[in-house]
Image: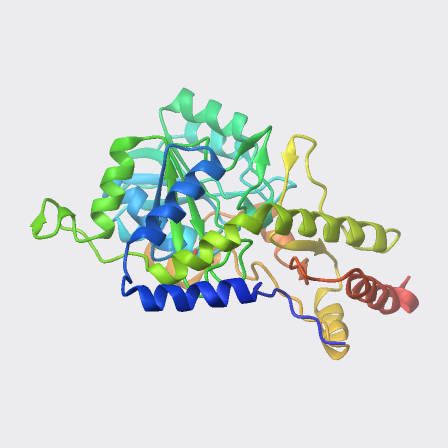
Length: 371
Ligand SMILES: Cc1ncc(COP(=O)(O)O)c(C=O)c1O
């Protein structure tokens, strides 16, 4: 048995479409990209969607377009992919790291504690906003986040890079903040055979600015109104994304079934399984358990053909690059506790029941003489 952690979906329709686009002679931001943007906005329930070269560039473009820069602080969970944090540095602002609650997402009580205190660093003149991350496909408690944002006058930029299609109380993630950012990196719930990203928003001015900034600051070919970037998307990958989007609901349903099989199969074992909140409709980008015996269990599973991952072994407030830029950061109790225990098990839409059963049986075998 050989079970990867994740797997990209490929079929003949997608391969045929790629050839059609190659033959079309149109390669950058053409009709496929426009179609993908329109369909994705419709799916999320926002007025606008803007394709970008990656999830990281989607976050970067939003921060730029929102005017975030020097002297601004941005609240962000420490337990997330480093690219949630990087764009904050790239616009000249300063991340303020927040602890997590038991869904692994931003703890609103900790946010409020930070907001009630004086500025956490002299260079931060104003805390401008926050980037809640719908980590592992589980939505953040957005009512609490939006309430804080209203009371303190902050923007909310949703990092949805792991949560395509997840819902918070019937609303799709990405449709609740000022904007939402998605990644189409190969392991994600929606993929494009390479890098890619999307900004979704109801704010027309923000969408327009993101569009301009991603393409050298222009709307007309040789008239540059802003100094922008090249963070564009391409036609071949947009065509792939459109087909993958048409299957996303089915992919997410398959992931939820797999999570259910794991939940059943791991019952009674000394591991903590994910416990989605009753208001959440998660999409299980990752299936993350917690165990005190992570390193031993990882090796045991690897020997038996099962790939696992750790998302993430080093929290961002302890990353060398962050400490180099900002110095040592305050302790985050819960984040630091879980990073030593979290283990991601294989999950992807085509993962069959017998393989999930095999993973569960192997974990059971590992704990047999340890109980
Ligand atoms: C939570 C989160 N934010 C941001 C990103 C960045 O996306 P990308 O790799 O497409 O730049 C990722 C993906 O790696 C992610 O998982």
